[in-house]
Length: 115
Image (cartoon, rainbow, N blue to C red):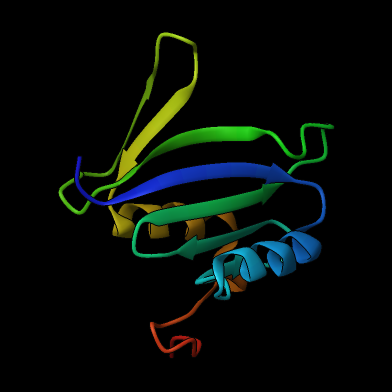
């Protein structure tokens, strides 16, 4: 499989989680949807966090691969019932923007917000 490994986690407190994972990863998130979601991309990892209010904070939401050759977002379940996704960066961005388009903030590779 080519691309970045994707790990999606549920969190209770977005700001505290952003601060914690930014230290752990050594960089700020590439994308933030205030109050709802954040995304980091390293050379090997695509990590997303999403706020949940159902007591499932700290749990794995799903796994997958960010694959430049993927068409859209494909989902499957493994033999244990775990959801796996395979997607391109552009398909993931479209999904993120659908959360709350006007509030989504993406950063460029320089750490500056996109124009």
